[in-house]
Length: 382
Ligand code: AGP
Image (tube, rainbow, N blue to C red; front, side, top):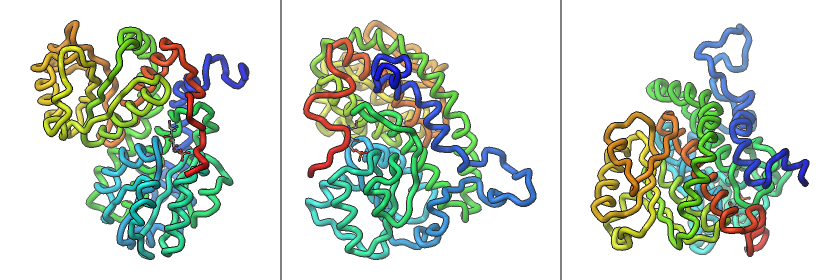
């Protein structure tokens, strides 16, 4: 297993560092980064995104009454992160369901629904139950998995393999970033009929090409994240605030921290702060705030001001060169800089330093990072 870890101490660490490549694999052969096709006879002539598994279903999906994403855990967070992209690009209402909750509620599903099942393993029992439930109701079933031949890949009508490569660490890392890329590609493909959305599509595709290098850049924060973990390792609580595209980043970072570092952590939608969570804040509480420069940036700055007024200890994830945020830097406020990309791609790089943080917190707290207690890699019981 030392060989399989390829020089890294743990699978989770290896899988975090593999992300520049796993993301590239997810996009390989599916995205045409040049704006115009150079070749006369080219399958990409009109298409810039081609997901082979979905080509026959594009019209059916566009005509469906709703696109419903169904998943558990980290896979659910990837759907949450990419939901807004689908909403912005495709004229079909989007719903998002945790598989277990969908089943608990006997959520209505109809034959003109498109149900997208997102699962790294393709074997998660809750997701499989929801798949059978949707099948009986006649919906179009799409699988987004990382495992060729898995139950979900076999039982769906069509799908997308994320091609992130085998993920061994119980804490999902590279599958998460590849799932976000896969759903983004799906949204881009479904919107190719819209001329009006072309500028947005082109901007996203251009920045997709920058993803591997941006992640490489972010991975250089490893030592900084280790130093931060050193500061935070004795904490009992850690809050993570985000909103918009980065609400998912907050939930996913908190899930990583509780899952492997066994530290209580909550991801909080910043828009809900004054509806309750603000009462928790005092000078002892450590809070990570995701404040990269997307559409939510101004709102996040005001969140930071309110947290500062209550003397919270802040760790702000932001883009470099921001005078408003630079002035915050102090013993009580630390900045983590990540490169700027299109709004909808920002969560893909924002999560990476927080994955590194959860990894180092776990090592420093002395726990088994690849096999956290009470958890299994694929949860095959409901
Ligand atoms: C991720 O770190 C967790 N171990 C867990 O939430 C996982 O994402 C969930 O069980 C879903 O698994 P799947 O993607 O294989 O369906």
